[in-house]
Amino acid sequence: MITVKTMKRWFTSITAVAFILAVIFNWSLLVSSKKPSDVERAFVSDKAQHLADTGDEKLQATTKLAEEKNSVVGVTNLHEALEKIQELEKRLRDIEFRIPKKYPEVEFLTYKDRKRILVTGGAGFVGSHLVDRLMMEGHEVIVVDNFFTGRRRNVEHWVGHENFELIHHDIVNPLYIEVDQIYHLASPASPPHYMYNPVKTIKTNTVGTINVFGLAKRVGARVLIASTSEVYGDPEVHPQTESYWGHVNPIGPRACYDESKRISETLAYSYGKQENVQVRVARIFNTYGPRMHINDGRVVSNFILQALTGQDITIYGSGKQTRSFQYVSDLVDGLIKLQNSNYSLPVNLGNPDEHTIEEFASIIHEMVGGKSMIINKDAMEDDPQRRKPDITRATNMLGWQPLVPLQKGIKKTVTFFRRELMRSRHSERNLHNPVDSRNANSIHNGEDYNDL
Ligand SMILES: NC(=O)c1ccc[n+]([C@@H]2O[C@H](COP(=O)([O-])OP(=O)(O)OC[C@H]3O[C@@H](n4cnc5c(N)ncnc54)[C@H](O)[C@@H]3O)[C@@H](O)[C@H]2O)c1
Image 1 (cartoon, rainbow, N blue to C red):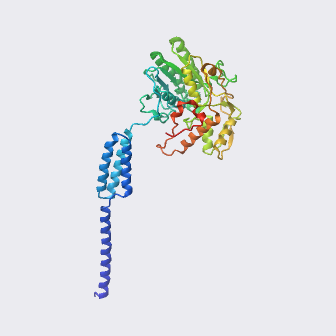
Image 2: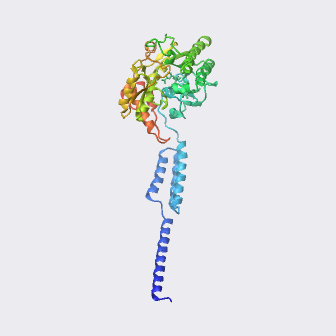
Image 3: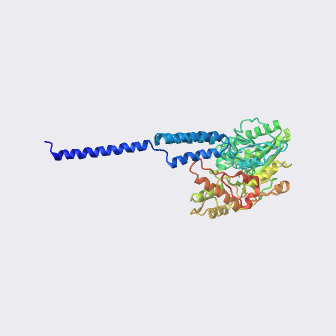
């Protein structure tokens, strides 16, 4: 039997359900008529403002965005508005992609002074710094690289510049272009890289060099080859002068590099004698600086990397073996001076400031700080015991000498490596500012590398 009490209970329940339904209905009405919030509107107008700031072509885009903004106001729900915003963001990215890049202000050279210069291996460590300097001087620069150890990122700040061209090409294959000067740097340079594929290293420094001289002969270009202090092997003469013929093990693990670089030099002088090609030979000693390959495997990068990541700093052998390191801007300075000189015999380019490996480890350890220990491991096979250039020839013939003190150069390099290690996304840039390349001495004035 339905009692009054039961009816009261039914009535209460129905009222409660009706109340809840009314609340839901009103809420959905509220949501469906919701206009974009201030934050959303600000977001859209920021994009429009950004586009308005970016120039002529963007005027249309700004108008378009303003229309889009109005249509956003009219959208019927939040979900649609978000989709719209995503669409606008995509359009913005497309437009930004078309915005002309900003380049460092390069010198203007008239056609009489402007040279067309090929840099093989120009996307590598030394090559990219050389490219910066040549570009800043106002020349037309063509980089040829197979990206074995080089990176597009090292030169990407020039990509699209009217004076710059990047060609993905392996120098083991012939190349047909028109140039006035060539800097032939294409070759792996660090032991792990050149030992990775010894036969390819030999091909690059022999067949590749023949291709470069073939090109030079055809177009009448002057060639500077990047030879190395390794042509002296484990030297019995100290410091090494250019007249020393070297002490190289022809079948050791370093032979693929040392001997093929020696052949490279022989090729240079054979083309010079037989074909009248103008040649310059730079015997480069250990060089360091920003943009060194992080897995370069040589002392400076190894020690910095180990110290920055808190690993033990490993010295192979006693640590009493010596090296002399030059900062990359000094080398670039020497390469350009040599190329433009009248001197055709080999020239040592290096810093005679000699340190034991042990000292390097301590300097870097002190500079980076942290808890790394310095430890010794077994010596590497054929590791040269002493390395120090005699740079009398470079000083007399080119008026060149290295200027960057070790502490300063190491500091710049540590900063670069630290930033490199901190990168977590591709879009985070860690670029060495090529404006520094305009003046080799800028580093002495305490100027810092900036991020572009
Ligand atoms: N960095 C030094 O301390 C040092 C010392 C002595 C000599 N060198 C010489 O200077 C030059 C540059 O050295 P780096 O330290 O910049 O080395 P790196 O490895 O950074 O640069 C070498 C460049 O050559 C490119 N390359 C290699 N093989 C190639 C091929 N077959 N075709 C086209 N490109 C190729 C690489 O991709 C890279 O971009 C090398 O010839 C090296 O032997 C360097």
